[in-house]
Image (cartoon, rainbow, N blue to C red; front, side):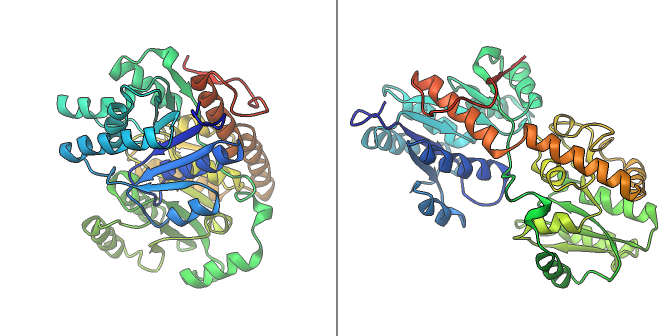
Amino acid sequence: MNKNSSQPTIMQIIPELGAGGAEQGCIDMAGEIVKAGAKAIIVSHGGYRVPELARNGVTHINLPVHSKNPVTIWRNASRLKKIIKSQNVNIVHARSRAPAWSAWQACKNTSAHFMTTCHAPYNINSEAKRRYNSSMAKGEIIIAISQYVADYLVENYDVEPERIRLIHRGIPMERFHPTAVNAERMINLEKQWRIPDGATIIMLPGRITRWKGHHILIEAMAKLARKDIFCVMIGSDQGRSEYRSELEKSIEEYGLGEQIRIIDQCHDMPAAYMLAAAVISASTDPEGFGRIPVEAQAMGRPIIASDHGGARETILRGETGWHVPPSDPDALAHAIDEALSLTPEQRSILATKSMAHIAANFTKDIMAEKTLAVYSELLQSPMITKKPTEPINQYG
């Protein structure tokens, strides 16, 4: 515990605070740490979401922890050790590989516990890459955000199963619920996106990068050859202008310029989901978890996702959505056609099952309580006054 009080101090480390599931989870947990009566610190290289932290009583410290430069990583270890000592940090929780190396080194010869959250099954294409990734396996306890990620850790890094805690990501149900969205918000988006009157909207949210599968959806749209469908792809290219140009060229070549629109960003995703008759997650590589299928189901929308990774754990096959083979535009087109052919009664049944499924398994509250319980486990002292909604899910 903190030497000066019974209030524990939890320091999370993440490269930057921008868009993304890891960033959202970090911010969510910082707020929950404060609510639990502890002190929350986030160390990052900044980002547009930093102002959110002060409003929630979270301390932010800016360091170049985004850097993969070995010299910077080494220097960050020294900087973090000073913070650990000056702030009486009890737990250092790293959420990315480069910061994890610095944090692991910084915790040596201190009383601080070191833990990690593995957010993805990182590519291993060389022994050097394997070593770089291995920082995520050095935690006293490692949170895996899906069973898929837990299996990856055991199979590739010989992590003892007893060190892994399976804690799925969670979303705020008060925000992602159909009743939380009014008609005005939906109308505003329709106007911004210039959606044709009466169009049936399908949606692929996700940053513009090749493995998210935008090109697969474009090809599926061409195979569908339905003029009533309007496709919205929501996400920034984050400087990947070459891939975006490739997508725009493909849209033009297929003659889909009036049916597909790429939107840089959307600040009202709940309203966006409510506009969609179906939501697509066409990732060609397995997602560690994948927030899109969970958010779509919470909003009662039919979800179609590639049949691998976290989507196998979050979608009830044949009940709340469709799984299709990755990189298969024919299968994707067929699933879209099936989803759009649901009767009103079938859509209502699917929506009810989807919303109940997410509420029971993938909420921010469940994620927070299980993560706080991990902190308590490390501290050997309870951080929270109420027990988790269910026991901590261990690997296997």
